[in-house]
Each structure stands twice: as structure tokens, then as C-alpha cells.
Length: 507
Image (cartoon, rainbow, N blue to C red; front, top):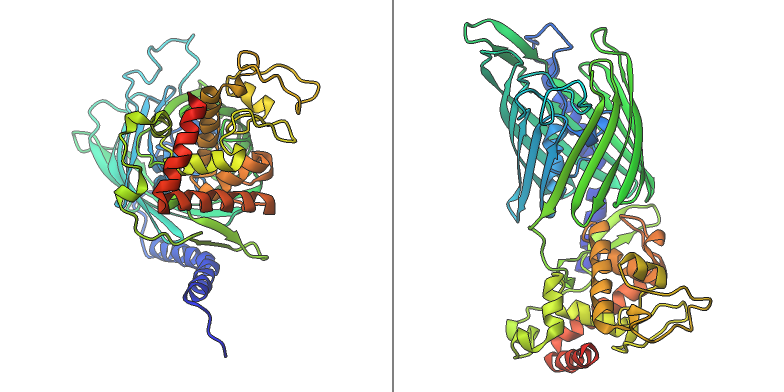
């Protein structure tokens, strides 16, 4: 019997672990259920649940258990923090909530949430003409969270304090845990367990003001198409179900959903509709929530991403391969030998190369930038493809216009006007900035997967799913760029030659 190579054995082990992921999650759920069954609930009012906060999560009818991916994650499932690649700050205008999270590699992601900061629980002022808001006076919470990815699983935990909406209320501590995993590119599962030991909030005189029951929820999100996500949530202890559909891309997304409760104390059904915008690291979420408990049904929040992002380079990427059964196996595209700093860059100051300064501006390795330009145009600022893409970074007319470049309407895109004052794609500096901006957007869209981002740059994002797979033409292009960037790392002389060619074009 012929033994496989080390890489083959490693891939086989990864495949085996991947296929067992679902069983791992099921085992986790069973352990949680066993714990619950072994406990005697100290609470009798099943409607006494910790208030849920967050415009986006409420807009998904609470079905935000298995797709949480921003600073508000601890409010729904703390494990979602593990997906963050950079800092995120979100302020919920309607509920006076501030959420802040930041990843510290390789330690993990830390988060903090302060809820109900507005003294009157209204945005700016309590007034009947102000339509935004939902909370009562004093429903305060403070959560401190931590999450990290362990192989196929994302694990997270939160601890904090809650206060009842009464003057003189004391604070009571609460604990939450969560688990998330992607079973395949189309299905993700999650579990959230809140208020593990139950919470009793008392008045200063000892009177019980409010109790929070344990809450166990299961979540599943299906992605049948890159532009469609179907979120689902199942509440176990206080029976209920929520479902919602999001349609759109990372920049703009619309959603609508409905929630159903099977307890007597809660409205049997509610629905929501809303949208989200995400442009240049800025976020805006809006939801109209038709829920019987809320007098003001308009919810809104704003947010931003900051810091924490590493330069885009071949070294940070893991190629994504897919088997015929749809199983996802990650492995390095290439094994890179150690490279000294002197070999990485020509022995010149950065100020001598305008292109080096531009690459730093976009946090993209010089080698990768040069490899893309070499593959696209071979450093020819007047290059035109058979499809009508033009310039150093080979930008199509419509994409160039979206990126702010001036491009006339052509009857034949293959015969453009080469005057950079008429078609700015032929201005090498503007073309380079626009191309890097576009590539950076794709890199974020494809969750920092360099291979998918390169493939989408070549074949168009409409042909590439968020988590793959990548069609053959895109794979060939990505491998070609990555191979060229590695060549620059290994050959400082050739890198200097091509840097000089690019400088000549930019000048």
C-alpha cells in the first residue's frame, strides 16, 4: 500500500475533522441540555428574559445567533466576535447602546457593551415626536466579552451586570456562552446560552424587582446564493422561533423577518423589515419593528471599523479548495521560505519610490501590487483588453465610474480615448489608486481570502461566492499573481527592475 505525502495525510486529517464538526456541535448542545435538566429553575415567570438589543439583530427577528459578525455579537452570541479582523464600534441610537470590539492576535477578540446610556431611553430627548427607541428607563447592562477561534469552532463568553428599570435597583451579575461553526460554505450553526445560572435583581431594601431566566437558543443560517442569507433561530427554554431573509451584498442589504412565541406572556407573532449600508468602513442599520411591546417601532444604529488590519499579502492567505462533496479544506497555496527584510525590499528609501508609498497607503504588500500590475498590463498604462478594461490595473468603464473616475460612454469599449483628461483610466496615478481601492474592497468582501479576492478581480465578483468555490479561470489568475509575488520576494533584482518600470509609468 502506497503511503501519501505529509501534505496528503494532513489534508485527509483536516477532511476527517471537518466532517466531524457537526457532531462536535451536537455534543455541545447535548451537554448544555443535560446541564439544564440537572438544574432547578429559581424563576417562575418565563417571560422574565433579559432584553435583546441591537437594530440589526432585532431586524432579523432575533435570528442573529449563527451569523453574528460585529461588535454587537455578545448581545446575541459572544462567539461571533471571533470573526472580527479589525476594530468595530457601533452605537444604537434607539436603545442607547454602545458596542466596542477589537481583535488582538493571536490572543483573541475582546468586546465591551454598555446598554441604555440615555437617561430617558430616547435618542437625545423624550418626546412624542421622536420616533426612535424601545427601552424602558433604567434597563441597564454592561457586558465584557472574549472570543477566539479554535480550529473549526468559534467559542465566546461574556460576563457583566444588569439593572432593573426601577430607581434603587441593585446590579446583578450574569454569564453567557456561545459556539459557532461553518459546516460548509452554505450552512453555519450556532448555540447561545444566556444567564447560565439565572439572574435575580433586587431593590436596595431587598425586594425582588426582576428575574432573568436561563435562555438557550439554536441558530442556523443558510446561504444558497452569495446575495441571499436565510437566518433561523429556535428558542428552547422559552419556546419560540424567528426567521429572516437578507438580500444584497456587503455594501447594501435589505431584510425582512418574523418571530413567533409559544408562551402566553409574549405576543404570538411580530415582524420586521429594514436595511443595512456598509460603505468605506462606515455602517448604518435601520429596522421597522412591528412588536406589541414597543411603542416606538423605528430602530437605527451607526458604526465604523478601525485599525487591526494587517497588510494584504500572500503570507496572510490560505487557499480554499473544495471537494466534489462540497467539503472545505484549507491549506497553504505555497510554502514560503523565511525571507530577510533586506531581500524583501530593494536597498532604497521608501521616499525614492512613489509606488511604495501608495502600496503602504492601502496596506498592500509591494510585491503583491507589482504582481497584479504585471499580470494585468505588464506595466503598460495604455493597455486595453479585448473586453474594454484599460490602464495599469485594467479597469472596466462601469467599475471606473463607480470608483470616481471620469470615463465617457463608448459605443466600442475596445476603442477608447487615450486622453487621460477624457478617460481617467489612462492617468496612471488615478488608475493605480482606483484599482487598489477596488481590490481592497474585494479583499474585505471575501473575508480576507486573497485567492478569492484575486479571482473576483479577474472574473468579476458576480461569479464568485463569498466562501468560494472559484471557477477555473479565476484560479489560474490567482495562482499566477501569487507565483509572481513570490518571485519578487525571492529576487530583489527583478523587483527593483519592475519597481523602476512602474515609477516610469507614474511619472
